[in-house]
Image (cartoon, rainbow, N blue to C red; front, side):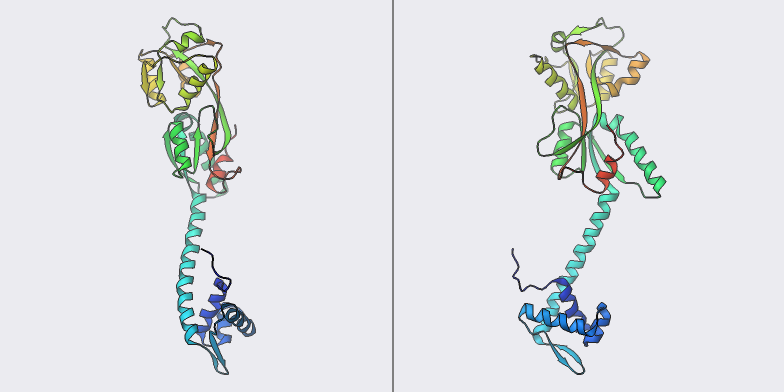
Amino acid sequence: MTLSPRMPDLAALEILLAVARAGTLSGAGREVGLTQQAVSARLAALESRTGVRLATRTTRGATLTAEGVVVAQWADRLLRLAEEVDTGLAALRSDSRSRLRVSASLTVAEHLLPSWLVALRADAARRGETPVRVVLTATNSDHVIEQVRDGSADLGFIEGVTVPAGLRSRVVARDSLVLVVTPDHDWSSIPVAELAATPLVTRESGSGTREVLTVALRDAGLEQVEPALELSTTAAVRAAVLAGAGPAVLSRLAITDDLAAGRLREVPVAGLSLERELRAIWTGPRTPPAGAVRILLSHIHS
């Protein structure tokens, strides 16, 4: 909808309402912080723009015409709505700095975000500010992308090998996947073809970890056989491997302690690279949105 050029602006309507309330140009001027002459000039400009005579000036004051009374009633409703919009926008601006909806892949949510959020709170405490309130959803990378795209998350963190189309991104960390077995397993190292032919304990389709392995094998001209078990969390995959369900390819971030303690053992795979980048994703301009999104990302260094 396009308004006509005769539609007055809000400031002019505020002058009209001040005249209606005060009954004099000088009284209206005191209310809005202008001189009597300035009020008179702006009222005349309003009448010229609208093409409607809105007030009658007398030596005793200013009286709205019948048309002016009707316009003042419209103006009152319009200005009340404008005030509501202005208040709502102020609340949204405040909320964008104080509350952040984050959707993150499980690897990021479990192993990286906690330290990032601690640093965020510590910085706010040093500045004497209220820390950003983060509402976190931990899910697989495909769901993270969906939530950022549909606006249910302000910021996402994903694994995987590709940048989602239509979204902005920034590398926030690097990780590698490793093939792990129990200490008594007979593998010491294996060729990539044997890995592809082995039923693994894996994450569900849509997880970044599974995508990285699938793409790496395809680049080598291979396809992974059907999994021995398909589980929805890294913790469940790790527990299944420890229970003897079979080998798995997991994030090094997720099994560092198990490798150090000897609960799991890494098996090198000849001819296969499983390095990967972990990314923040958002919608909109290339620069992260001002407010809580930018505040959090400023505390993350890849």
